[in-house]
Length: 304
Image (cartoon, rainbow, N blue to C red; front, top):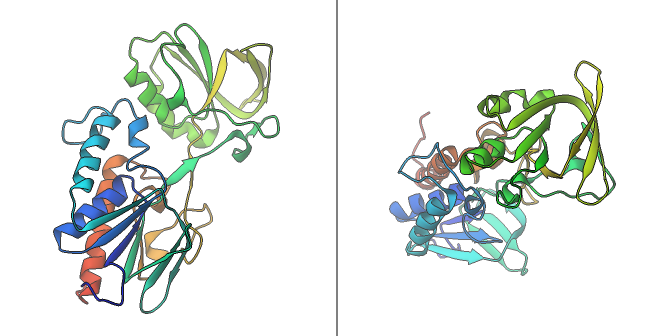
């Protein structure tokens, strides 16, 4: 590798677990990489207070994130481009070109795209009607100490609810979880928690209220109407794929299946699919993508 026509052997877009794993794997086989990340490395890991499905003895996101960041900063073959983002990604027969927000361009034989997902807001959910322009905080932003004894309306049944409950096992915060039928499979891990009241709905209309109070009108799956009141509302709606503009091929749901991409564009982590969004799968897919680029650059067949 190291062809002088290229800026690097591998462009990695996204500094979460998948992108960081790709950089470490690439370095282990002698590949140079440039990792582009608009924020800090592993920023979402720092928001996860409790882990129970990651190997290595890590029990919190910040603990794991600190370890990953320390390793990346000591990876000599990886150059970090933090505070930058890709405005356009193009691939042709010879190379990949990533244009940055500064106007500069990076070229390499391959790029790994691990930009992950971003949070959905009420306006993104067809089963919610909310005031125009309303934005709500995600559940991970709730302060368990401030919310002691309060009732929180949680919109959506995504898995950060379980993380919140595990991180605060003694909190007496009550969660009213309104969720559509498509989230039914997600709420199994919280179903038995006495602090949770599950509200399966077909539609929910969110209203404001006086002071910190709010109310919502819910239509249940049986057609019954009910009024919900709470002290505050938080989101657990899930996420939408956050892919850079350019030559990535998106599916109908906006995700970028790896098998549908140009041979020089490798997708890793949460951007691949809505179904396998876990830290462990992100780490594995990032490492696999780096090896894919390594073998492809040497015209070695990849057997599956």
